[in-house]
Image (tube, one colour):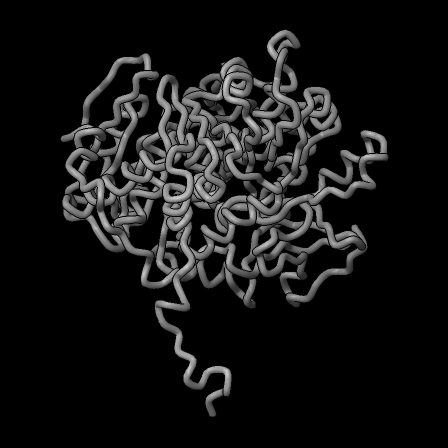
Amino acid sequence: MTSIFDRDLPRVEANFAPISPLSFIERSAEVYPDRLAVVHGELRQSWSQTYVRCRQLASALQRAGIGKNDTVAVMLPNTPPMVEAHFGVPMAGVVLNALNTRLDAETIAFMLDHGEAKAVIVDPEFASTLHKALALRKSAAPLLVIDVTDALFTGAVQRIGSTTYEDFLAAGDAHFVWALPADEWDAVALNYTSGTTGNPKGVVYHHRGAAMNAISNVLEWDMPKHAVYLWTLPMFHCNGWCFPWTVAARAGVNVCLRRVEAQAIFDAMRTHGVTHYCGAPIVHGLLVNAPEAMKAGLPAGVKAMVAGAAPPASMIEGMEEMGFDLTHVYGLTEVYGPATVCAKHAAWNDLDIGERARLNARQGVRYHLERDVRVLDPETMQPVPQDGETMGEIMFKGNIAMKGYLKNPQATQEAFAGGWFHSGDLAVQYPDGYFKIKDRSKDIIISGGENISSIEVEDVLYRHPAVLAAAVVARPDAKWGETPCAFVELKAGAEVTPEAIVAHCKQHLAGFKVPRAVVFGELPKTSTGKIQKFELRKLAGSAQAINS
């Protein structure tokens, strides 16, 4: 029987529209057309100009035969084309795949094939890697390569595409009429996560989730209109934690940054009056530990967001000395970046730095527009006691969760078992509802904000002819938070140096995945032959790093 509240009350275009982050730029261009949107070197681009360029990109893609549910990859640093891609690509109904620029050619080739990219936009800094990746592709499908030119890039320029980005945009219609997705469940982006196997998994985002997380970013930070946001966080990381869309929602300023360096960051903060920035602990540590003279004249009240390893007391203290306000968040690629926040309370301000650090080190509580986050017993799917001691798994439920893993129904089913997204992170929950990670059920190493699969590194170690057995665990690192430490058991009679093992790994892995320490010896094993990684973790802290 139809409810009286549904009878003769139709859902039509007049009273219902799909939620999408694309509407944010449309509004900002209409309401604040002349407000500054993008800064890059000498470039100053307004919201109306940015909106026009995004529409040109969408139009050009469609004219090139790329449309609904196709994929366009981008291999770009934090420059204007990367900002524009976050709107222009989905305006054409196309799915944006922002590639991690730190990855090796073999991995990039896999992603291009697996995501079935129809085009790729590449910055000259990464042209060489992409050129190698194109030669490694297994797919014979044609791929349109578009070269970006950037006056701030000082290296040698290698043209590998059939057109340039500016020429491609010029072929598009500045008045292109785009439409919201027919369904907010439609895919908006594809991001790859390292997971626990050699091949990365493709995480698919929907329009609704991207918009929900973008708005939650505003709410968690009380982000004002026309905020000035510095791009220290790579936009290839979970679409910059959805901040390209967040900044558009606030008609803010995208201050682009090709490379994360302390001097460049501080200069940008002073020159442009930066109000907000995000980053892994290594970025904040870089600023805290910079020479005092470099910090002179910084704007007051800059808001900083940190994710990854919990901020130690020294970092919190250092940020406060600079006048920065630090917010700790937690999340994964599968939940659009940060989806929980360690929401601070006024009463914490009166506590000593050690106690504040302890409270701020927790992963916190759910984002505003996430339905629920709990620490559950993965066997019973029941909440663990909120006693700060009983371990369970952090699980998410709601709009800020991926559609699933591309072409991997089994992994998707496992991830959503029991009606929750299983993070794989083990934690305890406190009486106030805040939770804190205690261990990782997936042997992932987080180094400088990058996820490294220990299994992937181990696979490479096993390829060395002298290696009998290998295990990789996280080694604490003052700069990177964690780095890979390799424990290697050699074959009888084999001789090899730690430096040779590192050199071998460099041939097969991206630089940040290469072990920084190599320890030789018999590996501790259970009676069934399983390597006891918990024993190795105890030893990793004292392992000597290899300077390379």
